[in-house]
Image 1: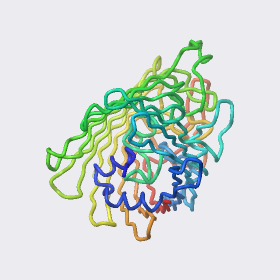
Image 2 (image 1 turned 60 degrees about the vertical axis):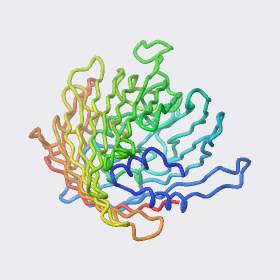
Image 3 (image 1 turned 90 degrees about the vertical axis):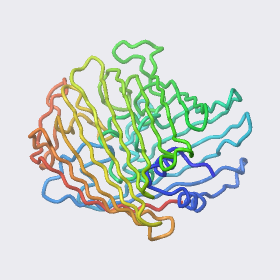
Image 4 (image 1 turned 30 degrees about the horizontal axis):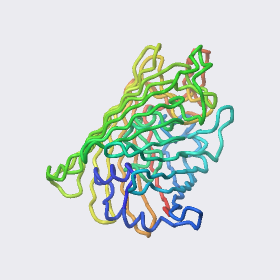
Length: 411
């Protein structure tokens, strides 16, 4: 059975076992009676309950998919439907992947076509996959696909924690373009591609933005090193690095009109203790022609205590200085919700899978401003005060705590 890279990554850090993942994959896959008999339907329904102690939720920590509308209440996060036909082992294999996202998180992801507004129905991925028999075989994706960098995934079930890291939030999410992947050997693989923009807008173009040429494109490359079986307890440990450079702006959002470069390095490391894995991730966002720096450094630990119980911890430091003030996948005006110049976040998650095909998690997250600024909470949302992106801060809290229950049914 084949697993996607996120499942393999979670297995590497102990977030899931491949045996349990295989059972989940077998349970969730249903072959459709189509012209292509190997088409598979899968997906999930993702729900949550958020409790934010204290008063005032107008300004919440600025990370992916976290909005004031989720605070202190019951939430449908998203419904995902996937249709896929995986490549077989033939030299000229072909296939496709189609992932549709419904609900509030779809509106937040905002991968709508150029010129259209946000929608509760968006395409997360939609690409044709092809193999050409060159060397060990080059696998191609043409269409809309997930970015090549990052420790965490857009899909909630594929992450060790429910909430996203700041690092994930400053990364690109999806691209419209072409991607080539080649595995030199069991231990080393590389992916490289060209896309229209770094932004998520489908079919968006860089041309027309601040005088950029018609040929302006986004370029990306990533490398993956995997420790072989001969390395004992380190077997399966991974080291990944990647770079994505291009224009963030597109006509479906209101971000900055500058090229930027995203750098990423991440690793998962096995230990002599069965079920215990450590991980780390470094994200750096360089917005061209703008002052300041934005980067995130995160550490992860996961422990598979029993077949059903796993524990996950993440600690993170954010530096968000100067004019960059990163945006996330959130509202119609991303610049209006910012974090302090320096922040830290601690997240603890307990996952216990009591029901078949159901993932249940309880999570506690603490975000803390290290800059002496009270930026969260309050009853009035932060607002942009001038055309240069100046912020009028209406938050008054240096700390933000969230207690969250997450229930996901996977099919």
